[in-house]
Amino acid sequence: MTKKKQKKEKSIEETLWDSANKLRGSVEPAEYKHVVLGLIFLKFVSDKFEERKQELVNDGKERYVDMVEFYTMKNIFYLPKISRWSFLVENAKQEDIALKIDTALFTVEKNNPSLKGALPDNYYSRLGLDISKLASLIDTINNIDTLKDKQQDLVGKVYEYFLSKFALAEGKGKGEFYTPKSIVNLITEMIEPYKGKIYDPACGSGGMFVQSVKFIEAHHGNTKNISIYGQEYTTTTYKLAKMNLAIRGISANLGSMAENTFFKDQHKDLKADFILANPPFNQKQWRTDKELIDDPRWAGYELPPKGNANYAWILNIVSKLSANGVAGFLLANGALSGGSDEYKIRRKLIENNLVEAIIVLPMNMFYTTDISVTLWILNKNKTARTIEHNGKLKKYRNRTNEILFMDLRRMGIPFEKKFIQFSESDIASICATYHSWQQDESETRYQNIPEFCYSATFEEVSKKDFSLVPSKYIEFLNRDENMDFDEKMTSLQTDLTDLLKAEEKSKKDLLSLFKELGYEIKL
Image 1 (cartoon, rainbow, N blue to C red):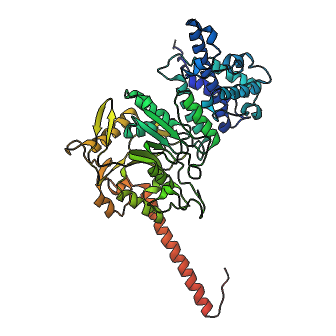
Image 2 (cartoon, rainbow, N blue to C red):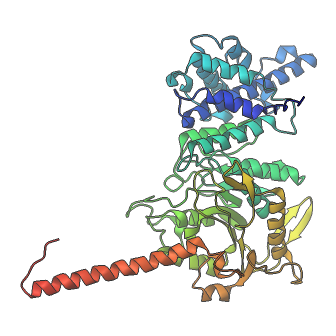
Image 3 (cartoon, rainbow, N blue to C red):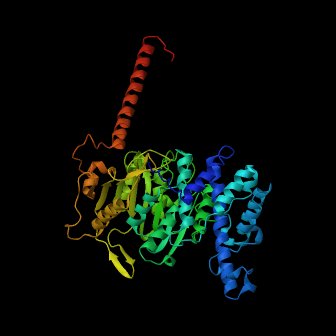
């Protein structure tokens, strides 16, 4: 007699996802992420409130349980009765439960100024949700003990899981609010944001900030030594970011509202020590001919072309770096070469000794696009950068005339069937190479490795006409197998452009010849 295969117990995240999926039909995935995350937020802040309330009672301070100050002093949100999770559970089966949720969120925000602009406004009522499905979701969330394991950051894990799943569900062209966790981990481990000001000009749901804080905690740093600044264009995503940071107790200045970073920069005078970003790739027509012509962020460089915002994002980042600032950000591979105005900006960046590393990532790491992506690292002080870590100074060698190129397309492990993510050992290997290159004085530890990394001098980059395509520098033992798709497509694009121009000229010459002979050809 064979034993029945034991069914794997679903995680809290999976159970919640199944419950959220029941909302399908009446609510689009792009909408119901806010339904779910808003409720998770209410459950979490209520649990924290009730824990603090009980603590006051146990300490003989019962008379203070309704005084806001006794909660805010512990970085806990004060909740009036109508905002508490217990009240919502009691009324979950009522016809007006959606209105009660909206009222709870409104009241939480009204009583806690730090949440201003963070929570959904009159959201649940106008969606017209099925009451029974909404009640079922409340029941599921009610079973989560958000305070069970503070070290494991249960609510944070749920948030992260849902953000990634929603990005997957929304698919290509959507879900821009989420950068895959392993990529964010890689960026933080490479640029090491221990202390100072951290900035993200396109912060999405705040993942870069969350991971920066986790990096500091993992390396036994002090999170009080950082301050966080960000900006987000989409209102719903801006709210997601504020909620995401609030449940983790992370204080941040995301501006007074959702705004376009180019047209309403909410951190004009900021000089950041660390910038982490994943701005939208290849934004078309981000400005008109007459807009942002004399913007101070382009000072000393060519005006970024209006047809693609990649270099506008780069120059915005450069303008925000402090004297010793470091930036790690993602762009589509097309930014590595080509483009008349882009070429001039790229050349100037290299001549100004700002480009420290160019790292090509594997395909299929992003849920929202399948194009190849590059991690850029800019360093404002490659000549004498020093950072403090655990009271010790970490010094970097002078890499003034060098750029490190890395190709990571052979790395990564399968994730969610058709996607790729970096393993912990991948990240450790990449960072070990990068930091060895930064610090090694003896030339014995860092070595150029075929098909992986190469340290190019300024002279070498100059000879390649200031192209930043890694395959132009890294040695490949089998060129056919390791053909750089983007480089090949750029070459084909140039050839095709020349052919089309030649064809157009031939057509004009032919029409002109017939006209001289007295025959007019109308096309």
